[in-house]
Length: 91
Image (spheres, one colour):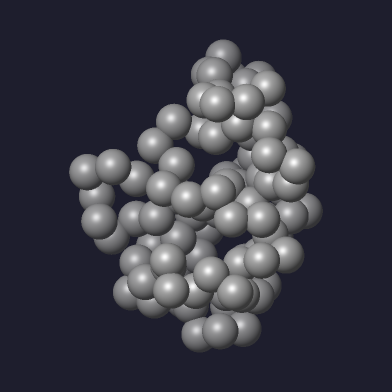
């Protein structure tokens, strides 16, 4: 997220349907293992997708690759929109 280099916000949703403002990377959940160079191991990585399953799968890959500070946005983009917030660059 902009302004905090120790937090990385990652959208794992495919197909792409927009980002939560402040998203650092859009990396499809099934490509997260091939994009580890973008995710510092010492950062807090916050993952989200539309409702949860894709970010959960990406989190499992990261934990398996020794990442320790992995969080998921509960309810994903759907919960974000239900709370009255908008997405950038998509639906």
